[in-house]
Length: 133
Image (cartoon, rainbow, N blue to C red):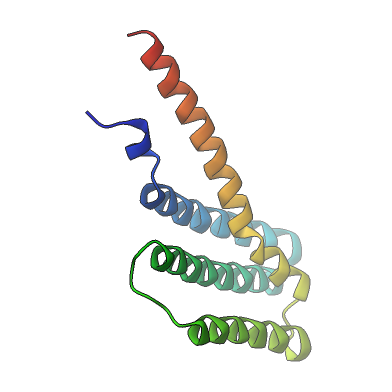
């Protein structure tokens, strides 16, 4: 028999967050396109893609801190310089609206809030189901 801790562990939650993140990015890109045109859709999608890569990198870092393969601090710093450089180029030299890119960067926050709600509802349901036993 699996326990609630098994079902709500880090791996399952991070996979759900990634799926939610992609869903929110697709929906947000469609909304940005409908409200601001194709330039806003591209900007939102670029921001969401950068946020997705950052989420994946952070997930790897958490796994490394928990005993997984180690990553050097140089590689971690290089990732943030890369993200910062991309953001600078977009803001300074691009025709893509910076606000759309910034909005796309908030996609993981929305995905994490949705995951929190899922876990609260799921944990409550599991608790109520076990009280009947």
